[in-house]
Amino acid sequence: MRMSTSHYEISVLISTYDDRALVEKKLLEIQAQTAFERTEFIFIEPVSPGQEREVLGPFCEQHANCRLIALDERIGLYRAWNLGWESASAPLICISNMDDTMHPELLERVLLNAQKNSWDVATVL
Image 1 (tube, helix red, strand yellow):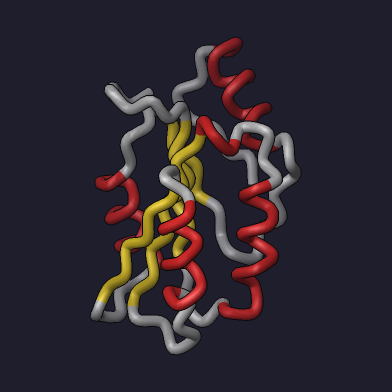
Image 2: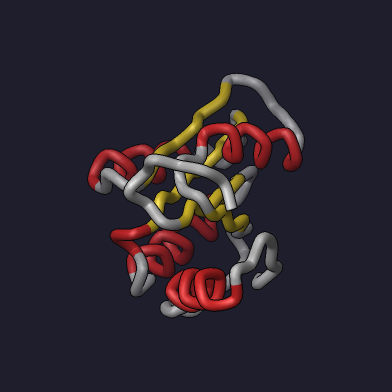
């Protein structure tokens, strides 16, 4: 686990590129998370033709636990994840794609099991 002074228990990195049709679904899934208030959500949008930032920006302005990294250059997925990783403040990091479906208890279960089993790394999606 990463050392952190953040009050968030887990950071979720979500890179988006030309996923405009999936944004509303993902935002509903995020808000339905039982661990929503304990989670930091970081969206990375590298100058997407879908302009997801137009929807993600207002959402993040309404939720203190949400941040948008809007880039002015096109970068690949792994570089986007690395930017999110560097920006994350929680000791645990989860990566979720826009087309992944998140069960409402997903992050709660990850947090419970990470603590219970002393996980250093896990894949859940």
